[in-house]
Length: 140
Length: 288
Image 1: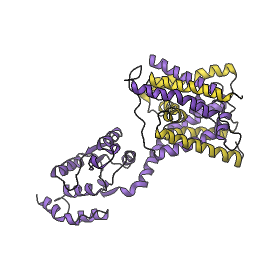
Image 2: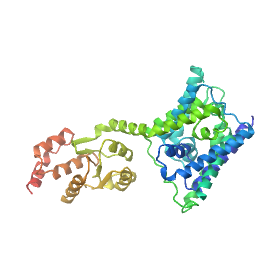
Image 3: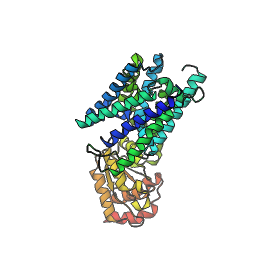
Image 4: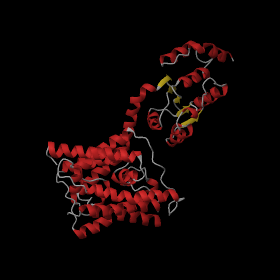
């Protein structure tokens, strides 16, 4: 547990490595909300197979590793929070045209103004929501 | 086929990275957002670890002609920070705090996340399907915020001060089909040059005509180009320059002889342009 920052850093290197591979080999920005969103709203019809292959890898590899290692998500049991969270994440990332991977990892690393602004806003909004719901309302 | 293989490989490595870093554990993500509680800094190390190789990759990409498997590299990042970016990021941040999942980990944890993880993913995908409609709605509302600057001289012809590229979607949503740029490039920064705005407008399916009016040098040719663009338009036309002044003068000249001069002077005056001194010039044009 004390080494969580090290595992975080190593995992981060893998995430950045995957993003580098996707950029240099396939020529694409590794933004998950864009890859998935383009698949479900029809805007990415021309590249659907490449999108689907990425998602297949993203679901399958951690599924096998996670089940073998006994990984847990510790997701809340509150269905209202789960559904509201999913709706807000889906809508917000598509309006903003990016999430933690696209704006965060791929955007900040090329000093994109939009990536930096988006990251500042979603981290601030997340922090304020957490503070209000956990420490003021006591529901999280 | 190789393209699909590498795509799946990138997805797989990304998923493994999320799992190893602990980002599929919602308590870690919520712990990072919980600044006033038991703050967990792990996510900062994940983000830092991911940005390092990616910063190198962008530099490598800049020295390559094309990606290994062909095609083109992504375009340079856009610079406009519009309402969709800010509103979207705020909503995303709120949802991120509620469940502790963002799109990547939501997919990566599907295999071991149970029913809760599946329901989260379904809710997220449902919202993604409807997001384009909401986005368009926000674009339209943005238009009303700046609507004071759109000065419709007639239902078919409006003039305006200088626009930004981010205004184009709202203009399209408002029903304009042709945009005319009456401002010479020499007056404005490079990112607003006619060719730049034209590319963005045409990407949205708008017709874009570059027809610069140099102060004090308004030629009959400029009037003819404007007139042809208006006649060829399939819907309302939107013309802009620095203040809309020049676009409104061109409108008067191209309608000289068709509309009464008094009426045109009154119409433009209602929108803030004083063209009373141009009466002789318009009447001379009408006589030709």
